[in-house]
Length: 141
Image 1 (cartoon, rainbow, N blue to C red):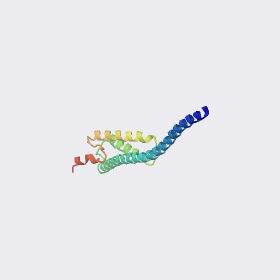
Image 2: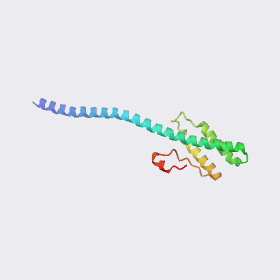
Image 3: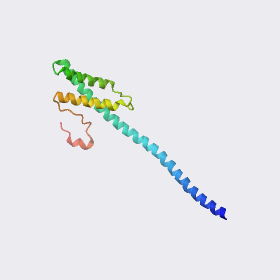
């Protein structure tokens, strides 16, 4: 009789453990699926934002370079050198290597050079990003 009671308790304990393991396994599998989907969305958003900022800087460098070609005395040689450095950073930016550890440092260097150029030229440019749906009422033409 002691064996029967012991078996009853053991099966009850095993039942709880088996349900716990089953729940954990299901939760883990669901977490993997939703984690991949969420990761993809975050990566897509982050990639778009980085590309948008890089495109903004590329446009500024192209305009400044065109102005220099049109009038070589447009800016000082020091600012021209900074623009060329910014151009080089943009050319060497690892677009197809998002896991490259230098991406963050390069983006910081681009932002800093952009601020220096704008301050030197007394420009009030800034990259604000694509307007969010909540900002759509603030757009003026």
